Image (cartoon, rainbow, N blue to C red; front, side, top):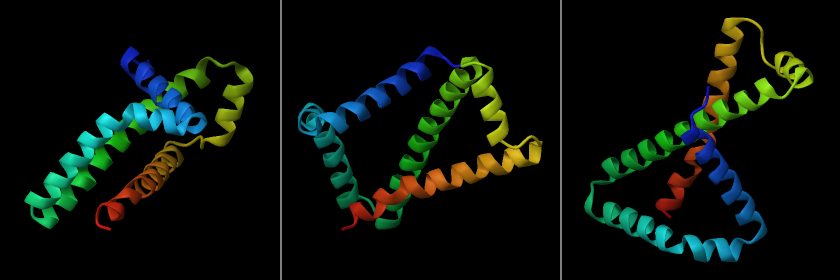
Length: 127
């Protein structure tokens, strides 16, 4: 069962993503104070921390945030699919493997692909 916090966080991410796709300038102006604060923090850490520690912290932060977002989306989407009716359940059962080993391999593949896709921002910080 998903918690209310997970449902709210996924809803906020979906609404923010849709709003950014429709009105990127307004959303950017709305988020600019928070973005500026994050950029200032990353700039300070880049200037004051040793490079290996800085890279490790950026990697750790993006990995943890990515995993939390992925887990929240997975739990909410699973709940939605579970209650969406027999056709969706049948499709979900058809797409996912039936054996425990197959499910573990599928989850590991999704996590690895998600993490590889989420660390694209690390080179951006180094120019």
